[in-house]
Structures are given as C-alpha cells and as structure tokens.
Figure (cartoon, rainbow, N blue to C red):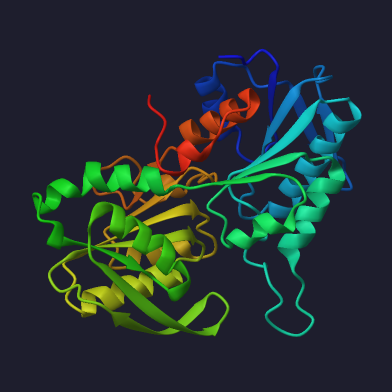
Length: 333
C-alpha cells in the first residue's frame, strides 16, 4: 500500500473516528493543535511538513459545536494550502448544513451551497462524504465529490442480526421509509434483500415536529426496519414506530446513518416503541451510547463502524483507483 505520502489530519470534533481510519491505513495521524483564544477565535497549528503531500482532513460536525468544527476545518484546509500541500481532501462523514439545500420559501438561504463555496475558497481540492441528505449537493462544488453510502454496512447488519430472527422467512421482515423523501434509499435496500417495502407519509406542523403519519403497506405481524439518513431529535422515528405498532407490527428497528441525537432524543428513544436504533459512527456519540444502555444486550443503541469504508476511500483516492466498489461492498477486514 503506497501510504508514504498520505497525511491524515483531524480536527477536534471526532478524533476517535480519525484514529480508527489511521489504524486501518497503517499510518499515524499527523500532528496538529487546535485552541480557542479567550475571545473564542480558533487557532490551528499543523505540527509537521505537508509540502507536496496528499493531505486528507477528517472532520465530522457534532451537535453543539457545528460552527466551531466547520471553522476549524476551514482554517486547517487553508493552513495546508499555504504550506504547499499537493492536494487537500476534506473528509466529512456528516456534511454540515445538508438540510438547507434548496430555497423552499422566500428569502431562505441555500446554506449547503455556501458551505461548498467556503470549502473551495479555503483551498479544498476534493471532498469525501457519506449519505448526503440531498445528493444534488454534489453539484454545488466545482471540485470532485465522492458521496459514499452506508447501505452496504446496513445490508450486512441486517443479514447478521435480523435474518436469523425470522429463520429464513423473508416475509417476516419489511423495510420501511419514514417519509417519501427516503423511499429511494429504502427501496434499494428492500430490492437487494428481496424484502417487501412500506412507506409512511408524514405531515409536519413545523420543522422537527411531525403532526400526523399515514402508513402505506402491510406490516401486520412483521419485524419492521425503518431506514433513514439521519436521526436528529428522533421525533419522526418515534412516531413512525408508534404508527407501525398501531398497524400490527411485531417489532420495530431503526437503522440510520448519522446519529445526531440532539435535544431530547435520548428520552424520546427510551420512551418509544423502537426496540433498537442502529447508527454509524459518522457523528461522535459522547455519553449517549451509555445513556441508551451501552453494550448491554437490552441497550437501545447499536453502532456500525464505517471507518473501513472511509479508509478504503482514502487509500483508493490516493492511489488513483475507482471508489465505485464501495457503493455496493464493505471492505474486507
């Protein structure tokens, strides 16, 4: 593996994921230091040479410090640019402001486009991300964007953890999209597993608050797998689980890529009809994992590690190889 000219840097938002990726690549994280002055300005120092190196900067925004993490990333990109890095790739497992991707009302900003402009102005040459909330965000950039998918990891988790529960009876499982926007994602998983599909139509009273849900499809006596790209306040997932159980579902499991879990999400999950919520580690969970039962068998939160996918994307990018293999496969151990 030609890793001698890869420099993997990370900000302060998700060092655990960065370490997993570095270990997978067989390299050390480059030395960096980040601090805030008393007036809360961010200062970043890159502690080793990046001249003519292939630089990858991993930064995943977390609830509570999204803007600080974004500013830290921009400064780090610019520091590497002015230090003569050959190429700078921003690795953003969870793309910030992805839900603000269109002008859906008067005077609404398209903030995702602004983020794209900022990254490029800072000096970013390439972006690697995962499960963009809206795939058209790739078109906001004038540099290459690789949008990886958690779908292969999701398929493997279902096969390893749920297939046995129905003892080979494919009719015992059903893939469910909690809204019309996620139907394409859910139907893709249902088709690849040869499972039935159901859809929940939701009507929102206001942002992050769902007022009414209508089920389209048969879930009676089945184990339902809710599939979505993110779980923020978890109000949608909780109401979807209630709708499914009211319609005769035997069990409900949710699998989401980005476990943001902000606000009262922990309490909502604990009180919900969801047996398990499965997330990837694109977003740092902090103490939320323990609050939801940790490693206990009855714990409500399970975590899928996507560092192998990110590491393989970095390796293939560095070596000039195609990353399309990762759209349908999980890298081997």
